[in-house]
Every structure is written in C-alpha cells, then in structure tokens.
Image (cartoon, rainbow, N blue to C red):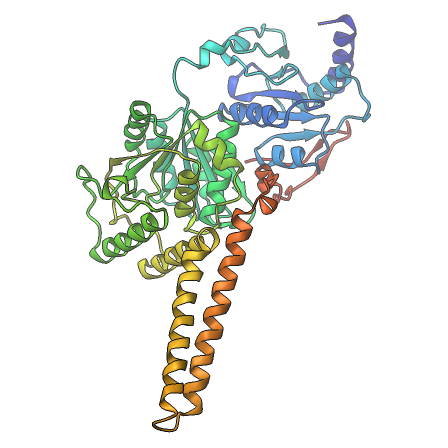
Length: 479
C-alpha cells in the first residue's frame, strides 16, 4: 500500500474514537468501489459476502440508481463520498471510515472487476495489527471442482416453519436463499437466524414474483443447480440431493420432484389428485405432448431443480406470471426453449400444520384459466379460431334451417336474432384468431424485448437514511 494511502488512512482513523475491534470473521466487512464495474459482478460479491455473514459497503454509486437500490435490497450499505469526482484512494478512505464507524474488526477491499474472493486466503492475509487488506481472488479451478447447489425457498408468512426448513435444507445445499414475499410476520428474521441468505420484497408480489427474484439472485450466485423448496414443510429437504444427482446423471435442464411417478410415496387427498390429473392433462395437451411417454406427469410440483442454463433463461424471461400459475408458465417456457425434463419420485406431506391456505378448487380454477390464457396467446387458431368456426357454422346452419321453415310455419324473431348472433360471434372470434396468429408468426411483428428483470427488486424503498458527521450516508440496515 502506498505511503499516500497510509497517510490518508491515518487521517481518517484519527477521526474515529477507540481502538480497532478484535479480528472476528463475522464482524468483517467488504468494501466495493462500484465505479466502472459490471452490476452483475457487484451483486455476486454482495450475495457471496452476506452469505458468509460479512457486511458490505458500496461507494461510487448513486443510492437512487438501479444498482444502488438493488444493492441495498441485497443487504449492502451505500456510502456517499465527499466528492463525486474522488480518486480511488479517496473512495477507499470513505469505505475505511464507514467500516470503522460500523464497528467492524476489519475491512476487505474488493479488487477492480469484482473477481470471486478466496475468503480463506483473504482472512489469512490479515495481520494482527492491520484493519484493511485487499481481497485475494479465487483460483478458477477451486470453485469448479464441485457444483454449487442453491436451495431457494419462496416464503410468505411462514415464520412458524421457515427456520426448520432452512436448517434442513442447509444440510444438502451450499447456500440457502429465502425470498420473503412481503410477509407480515417474522419470516425474514427467523430465516436469517437459521442461516439463510434473505432477500425481501417490500410488498407481496405473489408466488410467481418470488420465483422471479429467486431466478435473478440464483443467476447472480452462479448456481450450478438451483432447487426450489416450499416454505411450509411439505417438501422433504433431503430430496434436494436426489434431484441434483438426477440432474447430474441425466443432463436435463429441469428435474421435477414428482408425485405421480411409480416410486413416489406421496399420499394425496383424492379431490386434489383428480384436480391435478385434469390440470396435467390440459397442460400436456396445450404443449402438444399427446404421447404418454413424453408427458410431464407433475406440472405443478414446486420441488424442482434447474441447471445454470435454465436459471439464466428464466431470470431474463418476461413469461412468468405473478400467481400460482407461474409453475405452469415455467413448464411452457422450458418447453419452448427446448429444455429437457426429468422426473424423480418424491414425498410431499399434506398433513403439515401450516400448509397452503388456498383451496384446491380455487387453485385448480386459476390453473385452468392460466392454461386457457396460454392457448389464447400462443395458439389462437386452436383456442379462438376453432370455437369461433363452430359458432359461425352453427349460426349459418340455424339460419338456413329458419329460412326453410318460412314456407312451412312462421319463424320467430328470436330464432333469427339467435342465428345472427352466432354468426357474428363466430366470425369475430375467427378474425381475432387470425389477427393474433399473424402477430405471433409474421416476421414484421417479431421482436426480442429488452427485458431487464434485475429491476424487479428496485421497488424496495430504503427504510431509513442515517447521516453521520463524517458524511457517510447509510441507506439501509439489515437486522
């Protein structure tokens, strides 16, 4: 470190009362200078650091920018430098001061480009009398030897069960991620206490919204396998290892913990089983999978493992809805992308105390509406054109029959209007189907929307802004 840098640090340290705290790993902090860095690398550094219980300070970024707001949502603290045109040494000094004021035992400066940090070697590089070190980058082969497994749990008002689910999932995954979907209880706090990396929504965005965030964060974490598990305890977290092993062996981008395979031990209520049979049949029919050996037998299971390619694709798609129909939307998206499916038997419990509160009838009706909506969007000739043609033919036939009856008996005005209504409704549906089909298939209407799903977390409003005398501004605090 240069003499100039030492001098600047000495000046900053003189402004902070008290000696540095003892070096305790969980009280260390990471300092990131965000100027010119890729946003995804910044997010990855934040997530990997917070997963290890390290605080993160970020500077050279506008707190109200997309990067600043998402970084705050992921648990970082934004530090505003005194001068917007500050040099790197001045920015490091601002991070140094923030770490001292935050009471941390040491500060690790992230290198330019935000490479992966070798935390073991970095922590070993601290000397007894030093407060700051530069991060030691990780050797690529060191983290490619074993696949990185992330267990991801969408959670809403699951305070009673989330702690146990996180602890059990941690036995089978490298990282446990919980997305707290605007819970009104202590879901986030108990998940953090159990050891999970927690991302919070400031409002409830639904099951699909939670999955969107899971895929975005999973992409940032470079998950080789991302396994989704329900928060209510219905899924056995030991299934994580089974799904990952099946994925490694088959190479399928999506592996589903199925309730309908021969080796499944799930005992499902009869009404739910019949409803899922209908939904599975409609889903496979809408995908054109009519042969039984090509079927996805459990299209609604929330216990799934995704490869890195699948996560990358789902993190950037705009196809996922916000509700429970997102499970079907994922199946549709994976099918369209040409991903392979694999199913392994699993055990899902329906006798848990704090299971889903949504009724089977309303859930099933929502799924059927979702399937019909998919058909209308993607196969309008089938969903609208065919019924429309049937109505038009029926109206014309009824009209011709009515005309024939004029020579035999008087025809009521109602019959004439009914025939006309059928013809009009049918013709309208056929024309609409042709119009939608043209939009879906004509090259002039084909565009690749530039969706940036990373903005989905930008709606978190920072809960507090704390300014100190040293002009270090904190934009968020995680408990």
